[in-house]
Each structure stands twice: as structure tokens, then as C-alpha cells.
Image 1: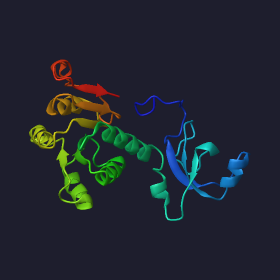
Image 2: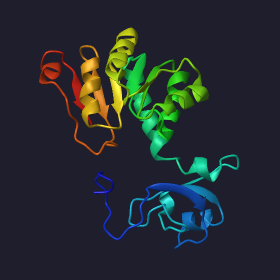
Image 3: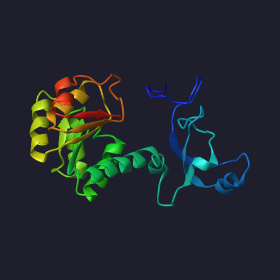
Length: 220
């Protein structure tokens, strides 16, 4: 496992799945020669991770960066954007007008706010530090819905906003006790998609009655 996630990696290894940089050499082949000297984003799935000054990867998993894209932005070209697009596709397909996201302050969370807004879908953003509320509101507007999961009023605030917006979908990157708390706050036939485990804990506080009688679901 790698940070709790199944991965095709063995020790010793360098961490990091994606990144960006300049190609300085190649091991042969047309694509490899084409990218030498170019600024690129890349995805890695072997023991050579991206958290290093130099790394080795496949030319088939490289994407050239446009001149206006800096390395910091380019380093998140693969995983986060594709994840957000997949989530957006689910929300649009099911006709949701609002969703919950439990990693509101993350880079993915910021992408999610932007793209979901463009598609007129509200995001209820959950953060884990009180100061992150104002930081997100300053970035995206004071009308943005942000809740602090460490607040004593969190569960009551969550129930209130979920009822107001009739929110029936959650994308959960945290897992742990938060999964069950959110599921309990949502209306009948709601669903929580668990796509991360930032808490490091198994999903908890899931009531059998929510699954049996309220027809709620938890999916991976």
C-alpha cells in the first residue's frame, strides 16, 4: 500500500504519482525524442516517484505544457482534473443541483467549486480548520457554503443546509466517522461516494436503518 492506497510500488521508493518538469533525456523511441527539452506534465506508476529532482517515466504518460502554464499548475494535470470531471459527470447525469465535498480546501476542491459553478451546481464545502472558511470565501465569494467539521455546531449546520438545498450526493475524501454523519444528515435515497481516506480510518457511524429503510447508499 502507498499512503493507505493500493499501489504497484515496493520499498525502497520515491513517493509521488504526478508532477511536471523539463525532459532532459530519453531512452529511445519517437515520443521520447520528441519530448526532449520540452516542458511537460507526467504521471508515474512505478518506484520512480515525482517527489524528487529527477525521475524516470514513460513517454506515453507525458503531456506537453502550454507556455502560459507554469510548473506548479502543470504538476496537477492528471489526477485532480480527471477526478473533478468524473464527479461532475455523475452529478449532471443524476440531475443534482447541489453536492457535498469533504475536502473543500484541497486543490481538487478548488477545481470542483469552479467547474461545478459553471454548470450551476452548488458545492457544500467541508473543511477541517476554522480559518479555512474565510480563506475559501475570500477566494470564491462570501456566498460560498463552507462548514467546519471540527465545530460544535457542525452537525446541526450540516442538516440545515442539506435540507435547504435538498442535497442527495456527497463526494467524500475523508472517510472515518464523517461518512456516517453526512449520510445521516441527507434525505432519503441519498448517496455518499467515498474516494479518499484522509482520516486514515474506516467509514463509521453508518446506521443500518439509513441503508435499509431510507434507501441510502455508500459507494466507492
